[in-house]
Length: 221
Image (cartoon, rainbow, N blue to C red):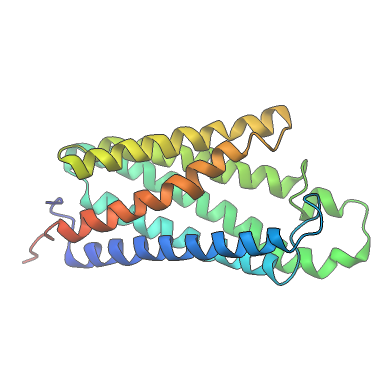
């Protein structure tokens, strides 16, 4: 059972946002695979129509992740709400930064991409090193990783909660591990973080759907 803040609305929001995260994550994986298969060389960037679809999916996913963490905070017991609130704050930071980055790339970047500006790749591309790439790493590897690790203490008790706690720890540790790519300038190492938020986190969302489904909402008077 959740806390007294876990109302029927919070339960519904949690299940819908968790399902949305899983569905959009699957759509992202399929689109990414299609985009990569269309390349003649691994060194080529993913082009249209796959690249804008990927950007839109990220922009749509981030608010759902915040909504999911709102429900986690509502579900958390009073003694764990400090952790869930901190996790919500860091997930919100992720959403603000990554939505800003990808919206700018999708709009401004695409419109001036053909202008041949010498500083274009530094400010409007995901070619390392660049400002957008660094900000996206900050969002997904640092803010997401901290959000997951702070959310982990919220889930204690039965087997389902223990599974969620363990997977959030794994997801968070892997995400933070992806920071090593930026620190040493090797983006292959960043794939460690990608496994954490693109590979492990969808399973966290699935388990959260199950948790919310089995949690009885508080009765409001």
